[in-house]
Length: 492
Image 1 (tube, one colour):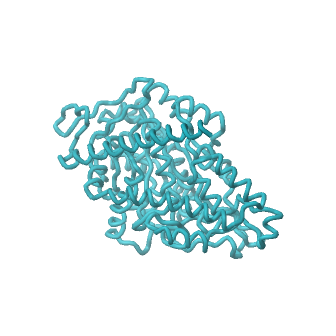
Image 2: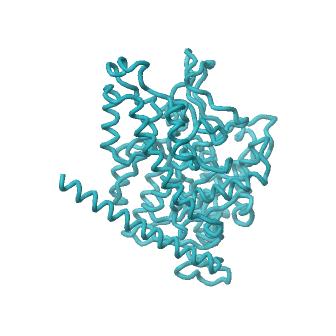
Image 3: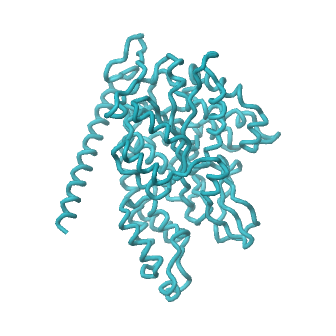
């Protein structure tokens, strides 16, 4: 599932640089192609997200919804929400309704393993998903679409994408997910049982004409690609995961999920929502829950507006394996600038932050809202030059990537086995409302213990306890830092 900014083009052609002249065309945003509109002057424009909201029929996340989110959860909205990076949704209000009532729901996102290392664009939906998991305290399933990456590539072998899958799982774990309430699975490994039943249920209600209309398939498209939408959609149904939600489908089919993803993945779930609305459980009035979605913008490639980072093009992205010097060189050499041609002109007219890649990256990764605003004002007034802005961006990205690499170094094969073990999960939901969770049984048919050990080995249990201790230390350090910052601010 490519729920990130790396939904690859079918032929994996290099991304166009915004400064190159191209034939005029409309913007294209779908699971396989992302490019801004090309004007009559041949220059690629930034993605028009308001137009996407209209075309896709989604809802804009407005201030009223953000206020309600903060009121319901008691937490300040993530910077992606505050800055409109996560900008659109389907049925987020219904998810908040369930949270207030203590009714169960889960998170679902994924990764299409297409390279041996993720880039900073890939981390965006996962970082936001972690915030959602921490905020709502709910279970999370992460789909590794190794089958998709094989089906949609003429070059990759199954063995190659399987290798990527393991490495990418480690990258995802390094974001900091809680193993108690996170299940990562590979399509190749997990297919079967309740999951495959739902794949078949969904596929039976999707016609070839619908698939063509939604995804643009033609007579030359292999049937695996046509079928893949039902696989991705079936993961949004709680009944696909009886080890998490129990085997009573009369209850689990009504448990919805919230899918954090880039806007290009929305077509898959528009299709799933349509089938869910029509499908009833065993001829009863119990409907399958429609997945809710919350959409993010794309992180532009280094080449500028209207482009997208690509895992197959090193110069388009900052990869999470990059060294500090590589990050510095990429930003200085490739990052599209919104500055003027000469220093004199820039001082007089200022720079354009809406197209400047270094500033846009700071919008995504710099936490401090006040500092970001100071940088914007200084650059747009001409007080700050492009080189100075790039230096700030370089430092921020070096810090972000270094912290990731430190966590990634601690993730081993045993941790991957832990997260990918088919086992009961444990979560609490809204602390102000009693949560109603179906009781899950272990392999012996007995109710799962409080810890929910399921099929875990002793080593996995030790790993789980170690991970819990690490998370507790992180939380304590974050609390101490927050108190220190407050004390420092009070003295100023």
